[in-house]
Amino acid sequence: MLENKIPLGPIEQKWQKAQFEMKLVNPANRRKYTVIIVGSGLAGAAAAASLGQQGYHVDCFSFHDSPRRAHSIAAQGGINAAKNYRNDGDSIFRLFYDTVKGGDFRAREANVYRLAQISVNIIDQCVAQGVPFAREYGGLLDTRSFGGVQVSRTFYARGQTGQQLLLGAYQALEEQVSAGTVTMHTRSEMLDLVVVNGRARGIVTRDLVTGAVESHAADVVVLATGGYSNVFYLSTNAKASNTTAIWRAHRRGALFGNPCFTQIHPTCIPVSSEHQSKLTLMSESLRNDGRVWVPKLKEDKRPPGSIPENERDYYLERRYPSFGNLVPRDVASRNAKEVCDEGRGVGPGGMGVYLDFADAIRRMGEAQVREKYGNLFDMYEEITGENAYKAPMRIFPAVHYTMGGLWVDYQLMSTIPGLFVAGEANFSDHGANRLGASALMQGLADGYFVLPYTLPNYIASSTLEKVDASHPAFAAVKDDVAKRVAAMLNVRGKRTVDSIHKELGHLMWENCGMARSQAGLECNLAKIPKLREEFWSNVSIVGSGEELNQSRAR
Ligand SMILES: Cc1cc2nc3c(=O)[nH]c(=O)nc-3n(C[C@H](O)[C@H](O)[C@H](O)COP(=O)(O)OP(=O)(O)OC[C@H]3O[C@@H](n4cnc5c(N)ncnc54)[C@H](O)[C@@H]3O)c2cc1C
Image 1 (cartoon, rainbow, N blue to C red):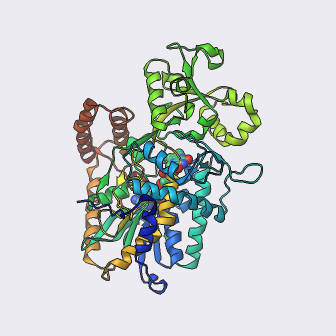
Image 2 (cartoon, rainbow, N blue to C red):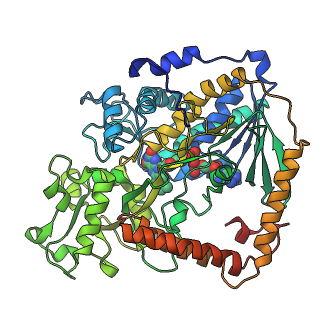
Image 3 (cartoon, helix red, strand yellow):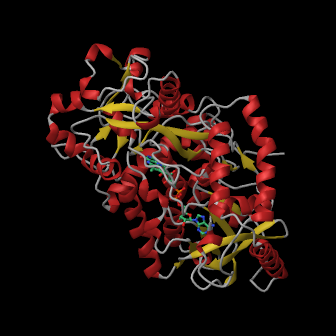
């Protein structure tokens, strides 16, 4: 039976009440406790820095060579906060309302309300760290709009918001590394979770450079390991974000929540070849000024500049006049697919729609468009060879963000006591979220503001027996890991890991992607187990387990 542990009382007072009721750990006792944090993206780095600063001993693991390489760095568009600096009707309640509505009413409302309350503190925290948010001429923080809302509440740092926020969290983390409270273990992959007497008490890792398999014990384990979009093979996520950590925890008993909720982002560069391994996002912020259209005629092969205004269909503006091009992501994505399925798509293969800046350039001039979106236009040109100041961008929806993940209660604890889950790795507060700029907000809320209360509360309310890496449970997990690796290496079949992954991704996109049907889901239920058999009987993993092995890491 799942117990969400939401405090009683009016929604506006739940978090404050919970904060006061949570037990504390005396500063002198904190250094006696070790916390393992897997992941040093926004959620993991924020949690490690905050808990390190409180005085806990933190071991932080990442398979990247630096915390700065976590996938959070890719976030472009911005982070929401209910500051109402624009005086345009925003409030904590409106951010809560928009998020619950944008989450198709499947959100856990108490968590969303807490998120909206904390959102205002996040901006203050990041500004204090020196995060260079965009500012208006007068020096005030600037905001822009994102899909599905009618206020301007998205704070941004050009098209590099995630990078700048991550640098802020990274410097806070490094401060604790130099203070000796946080030990960073880079190039280390979590291979398994160790559960002792029903509580998460450590992890088994692999040093990605030497291949050494090691055990690490702790009092609490936090997973902040990102999402699982890579199951679709092609997505906007980095290939290195394999997020197998939450799957490994699931095998040890942590339940999943809502794994079917995947966000499809409408503004990505269309697939151009079978050999592609990744898709590129063009930030949603572009829909603030770019206009989405396709030709009215089917199979119209004329270049965009030769199609007159009255032969263009600005279908989002036509169908959704109050939101226009800034409809929620799922609405924009479904509409793009629909017009392409009708034969009105543009570009090679007809799987694209135009995102046109001609009007914006006429209205505010190319220099201002460059000022706002210059790095995104450059990125587009580098990838497609096309100049979006001269001709419209071509975009198409792609898998972008996973709302499902490990189930957590109000305290962010999974169904395994002592295993906390933060950021994209947990099943989201915000339901089937169709909005943008919420993921950065959630990752930082979890890391800077929620875990620093709930994790000490767990420590202070539990009797934690002394456990170190010599406990037999660690040897047993290491043995399981060794057997699994040996079994994989011994298959010695004919197919690469990538070819099997690609086939899986194709099935997922076709049948569990933007549109789903009973027949499609049944087809996958029949095909995926066969593909799993194919993996275990015909995969070829070159090299051994004792060295840097990229094929295995995949
Ligand atoms: C292209 C792009 C643009 C985006 N733009 C926005 C935006 O504008 N606004 C917004 O709100 N959201 C945006 N998002 C979503 C947002 O960036 C992510 O949801 C968020 O940054 C995830 O942060 P995280 O800390 O949970 O995970 P990540 O940043 O993915 O970090 C995961 C960490 O876990 C580590 N890790 C994973 N598995 C293991 C393992 N087995 N062993 C050891 N370490 C492991 C990794 O090394 C990494 O340190 C965007 C996402 C993408 C892909």
